[in-house]
Amino acid sequence: MTIEEIKKRSLPHFQAMGVRRASLFGSFARGEETDESDLDFLVDLPNSLNLLDVVHLKNLLEDEFNRGVDLIEFSCIKPRIRENVLHDQIVLL
Image (cartoon, rainbow, N blue to C red):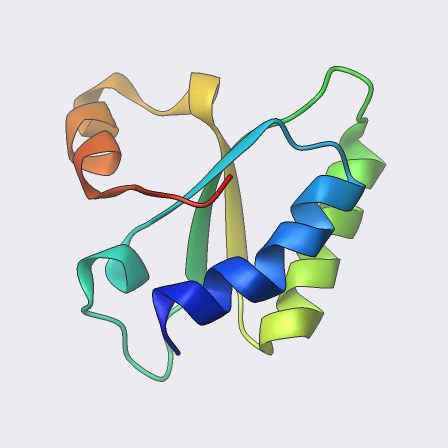
């Protein structure tokens, strides 16, 4: 699966939920993914979303890609991995 395909398939879900910013990071962003790799997204979520909305978005993306998805809020990146995550990110939105 290419980065462009990930972008094309994920953007409608992000936009429908009002996500302000989204990036791909992790193994897919580095081109090191395997068949078992999940998709790792950094997101900037609107304050209007609650936990159930975030779970719903995660489920929509997992159904779309038929694989696990991790959603990490930009503001919640742990300081010890922040530099590597931001270096690897590919901006989608």
